[in-house]
Length: 504
Image (tube, rainbow, N blue to C red; front, side):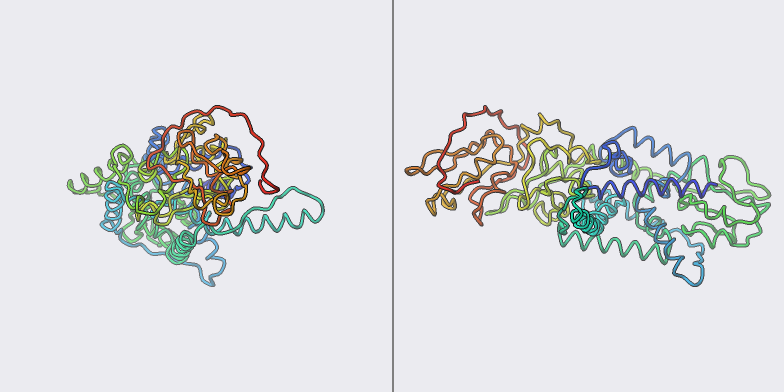
């Protein structure tokens, strides 16, 4: 029953977390965000002590069940492997391979070092949760929304308005390519080589593998019953069972229980690791002290990253370029770059579709992190969804009241580009759409009025920039490198102006 229980729980986790990423209509309950917060890297970056301790205890007690049940990328690989079996004429057989220990820990070291020096892109690319999120948001989400739009068309034709049309465009060509390459490369490895990604490349798998070597419950061989028939080895997708030597590399075992199901002599069990094996003395693991210190340091460094990393803002203050806007709650560019791994959950959940993956706005190290753009909308005055769903702590939770005074950027008005100045015609759209009255209209020429701005009460929501009819945008938002606190505004008396038939 162990394998069936494992598969059942994994299916539930995978289904719910995938639908949570795809749920653009916000139909799933808010409590479902725990699926993202229990992921290993987000738990560490957000300093969620309860989840960190829970995951460590889970690994020390049950082994790498996280990789088989909780991690969506691990379950995705199992799904690909199961589909592969349907198309193969012959059943795929695996063979034991020696662990690539140096390569595995070298990758962990590179991830840790690059994060310490303020270059989180490497972690963002290799973190399995973030990579899976980008796959879903960049590759699957447009297809999912197209399906929704098809249902909307069908239902609407029968006067049923259960569904509504949504934008199915790709957020970014670059992130689409990254998501597609991730999907294909990891899918290919799973199709041909089982859990090679987990046990060779994935830094989370390496760290959890180190803990799992000392877990209380392990997959164990009964040497008195085992006849080295290799059935368990041939079914081990982690390549960790050496049937000839009757040994199991527990640092690579993902506790899938395929070996237990395949053994017809009941020689394999999932049991407590203490005690002697029958009819064969198990040699204790010999660990070089230098390696032990290195592994311990790497593990502690991984956990300590959020508290000590000091990133640098690069490439965002170039001449003639706007400072990019980071989401409300992210505190600014530095904080976002310190904690964000570009999982794109906030991008997927933004109801206004103003959060998009950055390209080089934050510099090379900030590629794919969320930035605010106002081509398709503006930041709703009362919306705090991105701060609620972020599992990493890159976007801190905000109340609606806090959101109202969080200044992510300041309004800039270019009089020489405004159609009131160039065409001498009334507009006033920017003032109409400003929720804080940071943009107001004042008399200009005769019956004309022209915008004036007050940056002290502007929160940078982008309403004025979005609605401005001028192609070059006569009014726009320049981001703050660090978020500031806007002054509270007082409701001014509305004045009626004659727009001469033009206006919004």
